[in-house]
Each structure stands twice: as C-alpha cells, then as structure tokens.
Amino acid sequence: MNESGIVRDGKVLILAYDHGMEHGPSDLLEHRPSAEPEHVFGLAEHDDVTAMAVQKGLAEAYAASYDVPLLVKLNGKTALGDTAPYSALNCSVERAVELGAEAVGFTLYPGSAREGDMFELFQYVQETARDYDIPVVSWVYPRGGTVEDDQAPDIVQYAARLALELGADIAKVKHPGSVEAAETAATLAGETLVTLSGGAKGGPREFLDDVHDVMEGGFAGLAVGRNVWQRDNAEAYLDALGDVVYGRAEPGEALDRAGIDG
Ligand code: FBP
Image (cartoon, rainbow, N blue to C red; front, top):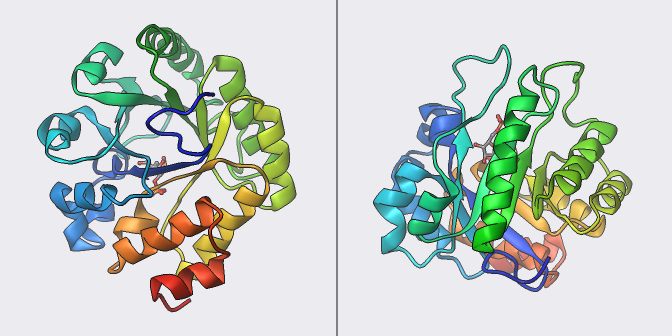
C-alpha cells in the first residue's frame, strides 16, 4: 500500500489503547499512570509512533489535544463473555473521519460461530474506507470453532492471508513463533502489510527480540499496548522499539541506546 499517515518508510508502529473495553480495568491498573488517557496520548506523541488506536469515546474526548495520527477502532467487545466471540460495530467510518481518523481499525475473529456477521460488517468498513481513501487495519484473531492455538504458525498464516483476501491494508496478527513462520505469513499476505500484536508485557529484551524476529521475516512493524504503557520507562522503551522497527539498531544496542537494562 502507499505511504499514509500510519505507514512511514514502509513501517508501522501503532500504540494500541483499547484495552479498557477489550480487557477491562485490570490492564490499566497494572501500571496506574496508564489508567489516565492523557498519559498514554502523551506517549503516542513519540516521533516513531505512526498512529494511536483507540475506541470512539477516547478519540472524541482526547485526540484533538494531541499531535497523534489517529486510528479509530470501529468495533469491540468486552472480556465478560466469550462463548461465540463477536466484535460489534460501535462507530461508523464516517464518524471516525469526522473525528480526524487517518485510518480505521476492525477486529475479526475467524473461527467464531459469528465470523460471517463480522465479515459482513467488514465489507461496509472496507468499502467505505476506500471511499474516504483511508487505510483499514484489521486485528485478525482466530478464535472459537476449531482453533486450539491462536499462535500456531498455520493459524497466524491463515489470519494474514484472510486479511489480504478481505481487502485489509494492514493485518495485526499474533506472533507465529519463528522468523520462518513470519516470512511465510508475510508472503501469504501479499500487498497487505503484516504487523505484530504485542501481547502481555514481557521482559524488555525478550519482547524486542520478538519484534526483531518478525521484522526479519518481513513484517512491517507492530501494534503494541501493554508492552509499552505498562512500563515505568515507556518513553525510553519506545525509543528502543523504534530503533528495531526502523532498522536503526539490533535489540541489544537499542536497549543500550535507550538506557534500559535488558
Ligand atoms: P497488546 O499489545 O497490549 O497485546 O494490545 C494489542 C491488542 O490487540 C489490543 O489492541 C487489544 O485490546 C488486545 O490486544 C486484544 O487482546 P486479546 O483479544 O487477544 O485478549
């Protein structure tokens, strides 16, 4: 896809902050400052961040006060029930554009008994985003049905390919486990850029190594939440992540430059 607000030099570094809906308060209270939207919007002003992903309510209340390319997440679900995972639309593409969105995001749960309903909603999202000429980022998280391990290489590769076939510009997928598996996922995704979904906070070096691996495999970057804003040194950690994503340094050197102990 062409360069846009959220793709810089072919790379993507999205700060995700939709966890209050998706996971509930526990993620935010794990590191108290991150319960305050001002804190996380401030982090998103980091030079290497290419977009901040939030739900409509946060976009309405805060985005205008920050110099942050906005990615409005159009659907979501809570963590309170998971029998047939379904992410309901709560914002239109039109409203997201009014709010200043430079991209829209949409979660798909392939494998869910309700995957077809989400595919139908995605049709509206993808085609309307085309009308407005803004990119669509799809969180593609297989779950439900026959999916036993959502990080199995073939499942992640299926997710990456599905994003291409449904017309997403950027796919956000789980780590497939190795450089080789990432390479296959990136190949299967064709013109769709593939990004890594962060996951629960890991060790600073461990997570940078994961990011480095998928970049080696041809991913375009990542969309990360907890691995940034649950850290005390989030700003410095973004420096290190930026170094790895934009290829300025290997993980060890990136941590040294950021003054972070691995
Ligand atoms: P993290 O980097 O914190 O994992 O955030 C990525 C993300 O996709 C969020 O945008 C979303 O809220 C959450 O993970 C969904 O996680 P899951 O549905 O896998 O629990």
